[in-house]
Image (cartoon, rainbow over all chains, first blue to last red; front, side, top):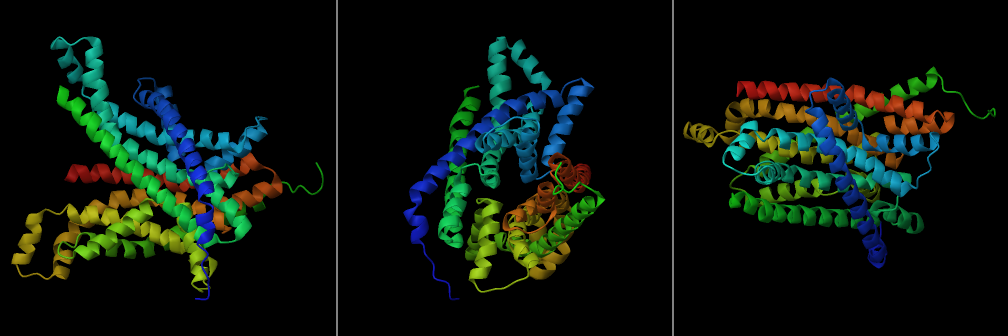
Length: 224
Length: 220
C-alpha cells in the first residue's frame, strides 16, 4: 500500500461538515413531519370504505415502496422543470423525501390505527369517560405507543437515505463531502469522516427516540 | 428541433433493458455472496459462549445499518483502489452491496436462529449432537422457513439499493436511464420506464414476501 492518508483534510473542514450535518437534519426532519401528515391521510384512506380512496392510497404506497428513491428524485427534479415549475434543489429534495417518507409512514400509522380495537372505545365511553378522554387515553396515546419505535427507525432510515439528494446538488452533508472532494481529491478520508458523522447522528437519535419513548409512553400508559 | 437531438427509439428501450439485466446481475451477485457473510454474522451473533465474536458481529451490523449505503459504496469503491486492488468494475461495485447484504441478512439469520426454542437446543445437546449437527438437523429446518419471508422482502431493498451504484458511474438501470434522458431529452418518458421496470421487478417480490409471511403465520 503506497497511499498516504491525509486526515487533516476532513479535520480542518469540520465546520463545513457540521453545517452539512445540520442541513441533513433539517431536510430529514421536515420530510418526516410533513410525511406524517401525508401518512395520516394515507392511512385513513387505506382503511376507508370508498374503493377509489383505498385504491389510490394503495397505488401510492406500493409505487413508492417498490422503486428506488434516486429514481423518484430524478423524476420529480426533471418533472417539475417539464411542467414549468422552477424549484431550487433543496426544496425538490425535501418534497421528494416527504413523498417517499409519507408512503412508508402510511403503513406504520395504518398498523397503529388497526391495533386499537373498536370495543376499547366503547369500553371507555361506558366507563363514563368523555369523548376527549377516550380520544386521548384510549386512542391517541396507545396508538402513539405502537407507532413510536417504527417511526423512530423510519426517521433514521430517512436521514441516512437523504444522502442521496446530493445527486441533484441539494446542499447537505454528503454534498459538502463531494464539494470538498472536488477540491482536494482526498476521496477516502472525506467520505470516511462523513460516514462517521452519519453513524454518530444515527446512534444519537436512536438513543433519544428510545429515551423519549420510555419516558413519555410508559408514563402515559401507567397513568391509566 | 436541432439535428443534434436524437429521437427516443426502440434502441433506447433495449439499452434500458440491458441496464435492467445488469441490475439483476448485481443483485444476484450481492445476494448470493452476501448470504455467506450473513450466515457467518448470524452464527457469530448467536454464539453464546464466545463474547468477542458476538461483539465483532454486532459492531459490523451496527456500522452498516447506521451509515448510508451511498457512503458505503463510496468508501468501499475508493478504498479498494487505495488497497491497490485493481478489480473489474462489476466486482468493485458488488463489494459494498455484498457487505450491506451481509449486515441486513445477518440480522434475519440471527432472528431465525433465535426463534428456535431453547428446549430444542438442550434436547440436541443431551443427545450428544455436535454444534454442526445441531445446526444442520435441529435449527436449520425451522430457522430457514422463518427466514424466507423477510429475505424476499430484503431483496426489494437490495434491488433499490443497486440504483446507488449510479454514483460511481456504473451503468446499471438508473445510470442507463440517466444517459438516455440526457441524450434524447425524453426525460419523463425515460424515468417513467425506468421506474416501471424497477416496479416490475420489485412488486412481485413484495407480494411474495407478504404471502409467504401470511402462510408462515398460519402454519405456526
